[in-house]
Length: 116
Length: 110
Image 1 (cartoon, one colour):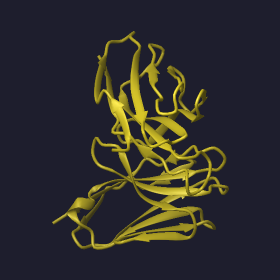
Image 2 (tube, helix red, strand yellow; image 1 turned 90 degrees about the horizontal axis):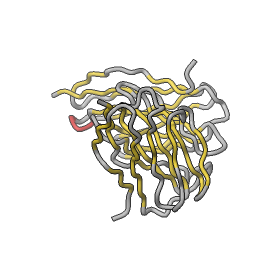
Image 3 (tube, helix red, strand yellow; image 1 turned 45 degrees about the vertical axis):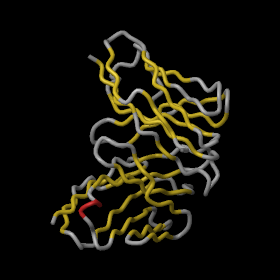
């Protein structure tokens, strides 16, 4: 079965702790993305990666970090520096970056993070 | 002005109705446009891509108006199962950084 998986589905964190959200895809897509969604709002881009071993900050990267050591994996770490981390986190991938007709993004099921 | 704007709704329509949503974008260089459907507490799922003037898939029609910088989504013969939030996304060009609207909520009632 091809697709994007995210784990865990729900995550609870105490203030001051770092947590890492997993995102794996077996679609052989080059590009991967992390978004955050808050209630009643659209998706905001945290980080994206066009290719292995390269990634770029999105619009709200502060307090987050990523790595892209393998094509199929793009984990996101939410650090204690993120002031308001409670949100729905969505990972996405696309076959190619920046090319019309191959830039469609597909989403994983998301991780709902709650800071206690 | 936001880069991508949508009417938040909710649009409350009876089954069988035709409903249309608009999405305006600010960057005239934008190249790719998408409509996603998002059910409550789920991930967005691609509904339609729009690369030229428009696209049709069954009851759904998406149109692009570059001169006025908006895309629209038309849903004909609404079903109860169409109830969801519809997100508009725009690629402003260059690297694939989609900009999402906040979504339009649709509620179809019997």
